[in-house]
Structure formats: C-alpha cells, structure tokens
Length: 102
Length: 169
Image (cartoon, rainbow over all chains, first blue to last red):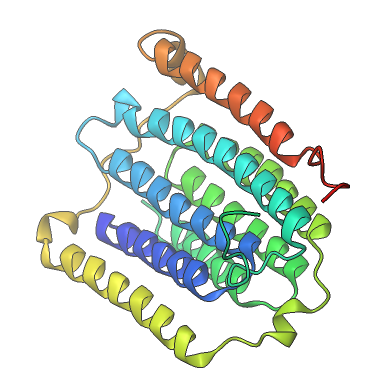
C-alpha cells in the first residue's frame, strides 16, 4: 500500500464524516460525523509516520495517542452537552435547537 | 508491505463509516461505528503501529462507542427522523460539499508524485520504546493530557447533572 492510497482512504473518511455532520439532523450523529473526521486525521498521523524517513522516532504514534486522548475528552463533553440539551428542549434535532436563551 | 491486509481494513472502516451515517436506527448506527473504529485499529496494526491500534480499539471501539450507545438510549426520540424526513435540497448541498472536499484533497494527493511511494522497512515500535519516550521527552504533554481528561470528566458530570431549578420553570 502506497502513501497516497492511505491518504485517499483518510480523505474519503473525512468526506463521509463531513457529509454525515451536514446531513443528519440528530445531534448524536453529528457528533459521530465529527469523530469520523477526527479519525481521518489520526490515520494521516500513522500514514506519515509509517512512510517517513525516521519511523524509529515514534513521533506519529505519540501524536496519535495524545490525539485519541483529546478525542475521548471531546466525546465525553459533547455527549454530556447533548444529554443536557435533550433534557432542556426535549429534542436532539439540531434544527429545533435554535435559541441561546432557554 | 503486504497489500491485501491494509486494503481490507481500509475498506472495512469506510463501509462502517458509510453505514454509521446512513442507517435509520440509531443503535445500528452505533454498531456500524464500532465496525469503522475497529477497521481503523486493524489498519494501524497492519501498518506496524501495534500499540496505536490497540489504543484505538480500546478507546474508540470500547469507550467512545459505549458512550454513544448510552447517549442514544438516553436521548430516545419517538421516530423523530421519520416525522421529519430528510429534505433533499439540504441533502444535495451537504453531499455536494463533501464530494467537493474529497475531490479537492484527492487532486492535491494525486498531483504530487512524491506521495506515491512504497513503505520503507517496517519499524519496530515496541511498547517499551513508546513508554520510555512518553515518560521521558514527552512527560509534559502526558501530564497535561491527564489534567485535560480529569477536567473533561468533571465537566461532563456537571453538564449532565439535573438542572437545579428545572422543576420550577
């Protein structure tokens, strides 16, 4: 597998996540789309690490591990926000959450 | 490098991603998402980053997917999307944006011939080396990540707590 084919896979994942975040009306699925875009970026870290001149430095792997930790924090806070919004508005439809003042 | 295994995992993760964002039932979406994350984890292992693949499967297919299943079950809507069907004008613009982004990235990737190269010899990224690196040169980011995770956990708990005067209003 060459580097550009891996990057194309990553671009496809990013486009799928973007389409999902734009199309779906449920807030949870918007978050899933964002997670997929984040994973596409993570795949780039691994791809560039694997094909770099000095893969013994592990820079890409370490960056991926930190990125996964940040993504986990983001998912936890995002889902807590969705649950709080659902409790308040009784909906998770992003089209109907249109007021900043409760 | 063997071609078939990474290609299989890449196809698995893309198929899982498409299913996760196109299925109607939210629980099916969450299960398809597990497939996509596991495919990416397998791809990392196939590319020689075993520890990263295991972390991906643990954190994403394990923790994040379970979180999403919990959120789906807590935020149950009675056939919300069936009563509000996808409007095709919105869908077309969304799909068009995604396709345009993909075409733009793909054009850049295919126009640069330096990206079309085979992998060098597989590096040996043992867990011991990664641990030494993490506790040595990268100790400050590691501590900051620990602080971030603690803050995120507290923040998530506070956000998901019941609103104090929800009964009155």
